[in-house]
Image 1: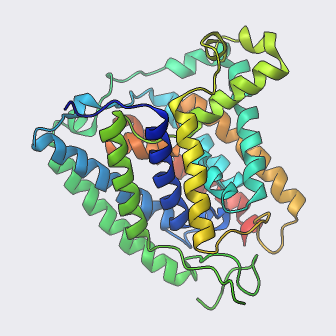
Image 2 (image 1 turned 60 degrees about the horizontal axis):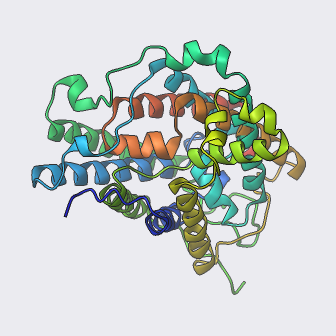
Length: 205
Length: 171
């Protein structure tokens, strides 16, 4: 059987989505106060969960290649457009600090009962309209500094994939240690709302 | 209080689950998880109803209208699943709370205005970057794409800078 299966049907979408949403909510990513606490250095769950997930999935894809199931050329790899991605990433970081979510976590927020998540979604639709309206004048920025198609870190640095994975693990371990130390100093991490005072930070934890 | 919420999973465990779900998605579909693509399609569909001529004639959104039924796509089913999966989790762990989540010194009106403004920046930024934290950062990161790490570094810089201005909203 050919791998990957390239099955983009309804059932595949629902299955992938249900697992995605379940783990996002379990991580606490339906709560904007917890999400934004990453940038107040009080709660490092965003860094820890994302870094762990990237390393687990990247290691899995590498093992599938090593064991000859399918190679990295068989999956979709985004191409770099340096300026558009750098400015877009800054704006999404700003939108996250101001609005409390990113696109995926806003869906987890609404599924946790957060009405602010629904308003954030309306804002995103408006943001897409603004982009579409300004698309012609933005084209220069949108296509500037295009990188090689689907370029990866092993290709960029000329290193084997395992060496990049090892470097990411070292960065993750360092980030976990620094993050946990800062969480202790700033009274984090933040737990779920719903105890005696739902909208206040639990100072005694 | 009898319905006290259950604690969140430790980040390492949640990250392991998320990483395995992402790996499974690559094996089944050949690509990773996403979400901003759904809101692009929602914007095309809503634009198609509210301002049909402007949307169909728009160089960016017009192609979604030309292809017919902008919401009929894999990403729509995936985001529907995301909502259902998160709903199952929040109910099972008694973490579902109808609320406008904010810090104790912030009014609901201010919080909702900021949610709207943050959403606008995010919707615009995700179209410019060609993806968001899930599609570009997480899924691109799993393929070790250079684009993903440019995005993640920019995302964290933007978050830290603007968090200095908005921390009172949450504290």
